[in-house]
Length: 159
Image (tube, rainbow, N blue to C red; front, side, top):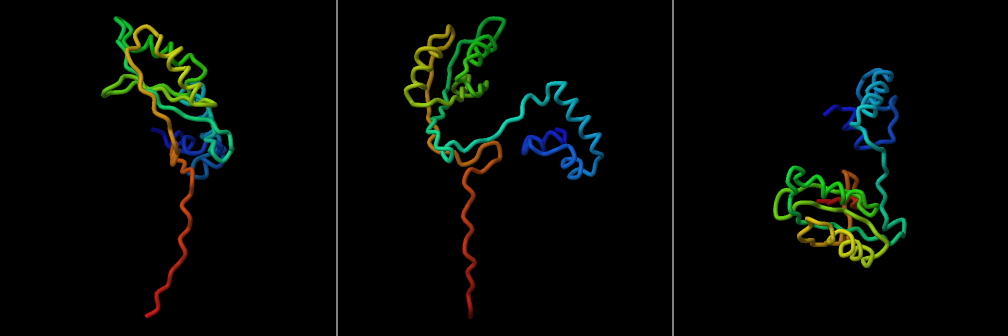
């Protein structure tokens, strides 16, 4: 993967000038590369990571395992497309293992998550089962640590 993409993934707020300085490249070259990535679809969106606990929002985040029957000719794609169209869905991944899709969603309450699962997700043709897990605490997301470890006091031992 290109160094520019790695840097932007870690911090999308960096300017082309800052990235150029980090890489020892010309700013115009970095600007051109970023424009090419945006135009070509490699960069889809710039976003912020929010610590909702500190924002006192009270939202809940759920990870939902979904088992599905693959569709002839479409595999998992048709059902995945139907699921990711819902506004409640933050992320959707095809998985290997004991279930097929992972849905990540946020809502104002556990009840809203439950209603989404039983009224929308579970009723889709081809969905054969779901298991919902609630994220109790986030420690790290996309390389960003939510609570920095407290600095330990310096201890000196005199002999």
